[in-house]
Image (cartoon, rainbow, N blue to C red; front, side, top):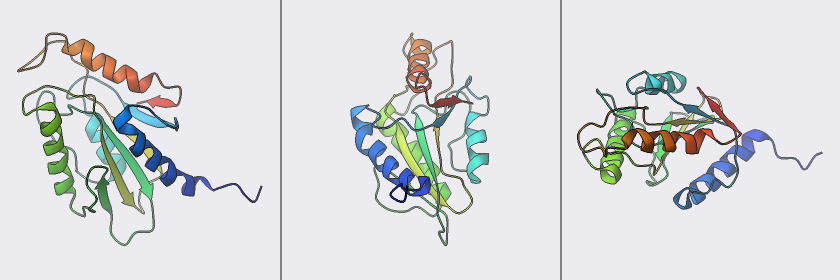
Length: 173
């Protein structure tokens, strides 16, 4: 039918809905997304960076990803690739700034230690070199608490991962 909206026009609208409902913990529309799941320091974040084409995720030893990162890739005919966080209105053209912002936001919500938070960081990457896709980077599965982590950190992270992957439209990588 002539009134149908092409998928490439629908995805930005759905992204806006996801952003609006994120603070409530309610997914308004369950579009397919790819969740990266695995143990700590197994290369999950590196896989995401290779899909995006930029080094923009914090690195280190032990638990580095301490909050879910919802990464919305948007294929657009932009002059220069840029990223934009849901909580910041400005465009970031430096992916080093993106990395620093992810770290600062993680520390702000989860603390500067090793604690985790299920509150997601939502990041859009606008580029002509990506496909329209939503990826979720999750904290790595662990067995033993370190630093200021609670004794049941394994259960906390496992439940956080389950919340994402239990959705029927979630592809687990």
